[in-house]
Length: 429
Image 1 (cartoon, rainbow, N blue to C red):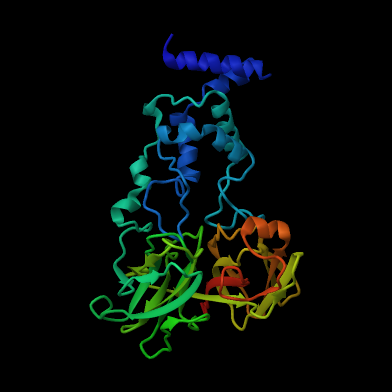
Image 2 (image 1 turned 90 degrees about the vertical axis):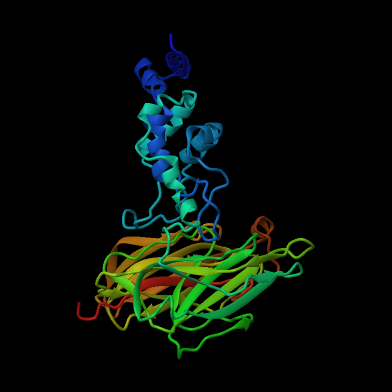
């Protein structure tokens, strides 16, 4: 009897002992990594569990799952996480089936992983391995760490910024004019990727703005050095980069300035200093552009969360003055934020739930990207609602003082309630 046959027989015997029918036990024992589990890992896990160098703002799990040798030691943990639906991570309950990047396993996929582990997590025959290789997943490593591939041009801060040992919260905004050799004329881009360029932990978020040469720019370190308008996007823990759909773009005018807006947060102390040299990689669009993307936000900067309170509501709203085509939503809050909801109230009196995130987690700040842009007509009122929990229990777990009232602020232990929206104004289209 061969080794694989012996594994299958032992697995079948264990499964029968566990109360499965002989047929079910045989089916369970026949599951192998290369034939059955590797495609699931590839499609749902490897975008985070990879070996490419870490880039803040890009989901990167603590261990790679690019091969059988990587995966086998974690088999029991994987079964537990997929059975509880903690992995792959997805925090929205509704709507389902409309977001391009929605994560989740089917019941059949969960059963395959769990039964494979119960059978002893056998490797099987490598000849059954999917056509893709692990190296394909970590191809970003060969493109300088860019997850979208090599950009057409890169704009970076001229010198690294050093966050000193004694720093706790630092907000810094620096403008960099795009050199003429990189942008010799007005140019449409189809996407961009932000990289914080940090050599240590402690980046809370990074935002990038692009403004014409005669626009207002800010440079320096302040508590609120955030320019108005021209936002490309922001990244934080768990965010992912992406290219725009066909026919969408962003116009960069010759002579424009990129404003890097950085928030650093760490525990002060000897040896905690690190440096950051942020950069933006741009991808040029040579095809016709029909829609110019705008990234804007619903916001409430005037709230105060009382001490020792749970499920505290903060709302914000806007009524549309024109039709818009929505590409994505990005909710952003801090340590006390627990849930976010976007609702559309239409001019005809009907309403629609646009996004419900009942398990908001600052460590996984997901951008919810529509598979197809969604039209919201002029006169629609968009309301966003945040829920915050400022209790002793959460404070201990998240590292904040629940005995103080907390309002809007730039520090990590303050709060924010931003409902970012990326969209286009189709006009007469």
